[in-house]
Image 1 (cartoon, rainbow, N blue to C red):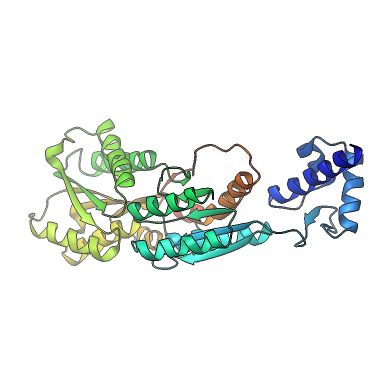
Image 2: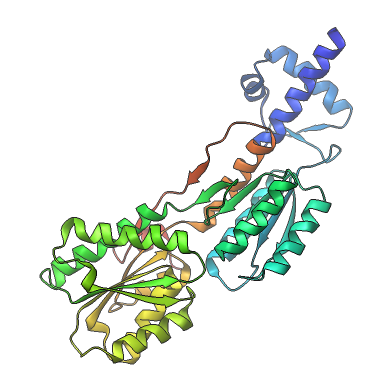
Length: 360
């Protein structure tokens, strides 16, 4: 019985170091496991002698690669979006720091066959957990179900899916912030008057669209009069610059110069596309636009002195990686986690942009 107890405590020490995602001190391990410091020190000495842990110069301990490392799958389109690029880079860095094996596979935006094939690769590889960042909502649900039946836990990034732990934006709250910014602009610049509210929607993610752009309308109505359905225009895009620019150009052609438009983009690419359309048409003074994500593309546009991209709601995708890997480690260690983990949002405009994101 004593041998089993000692083995059990040794495994507790190993799991505490692995799940932390960073090297730990004896005191931190003792606090995490509830094992006395002297016992932790003896266990670490044995584990170090057997090659399972390594003692660092700063008196912290980390696991070596002798034990099988956790394998995390990451399924997402690997190009085409600055936001996803930041998320992927953060995940790679955090996985390396946590000594976690990462298998990143390139899912296309809405290619269900490719997504299913990549899911099977991860199932065959016996992934311990999968992070799924699939923009097309219907594909996300299909692939998540594939992992669910294989018994592999999934973190779904920015797109809610049944059976998954959600990580990402609070779409309603982010939308509401955008609406409040537009309402304040209308009050301060147009004396509370406007002609239309233009919502640049995405055909890829209906749930996110409803929550985010629905939040925009709530934020507007809180402090601005006259926001009724007859003044709301819905423009369909693929949440990219090209389709947004095309849709906005067509709409501007139907309205007279001087028509005052409050524009909310589903994301920054849609917002920037709308700004470009107005610029080409010589109609920039007619619009005020707020985006979502605060990507580098949007930050560059906001910094232009006369830009009508007046703000973007920040999600800080460069911070996703560390938080995602920490969440994944907790799930793989069978700790209780909330069903949804939301990032913090902030309104980014010309007043604070250089303080939050220094110029490169």
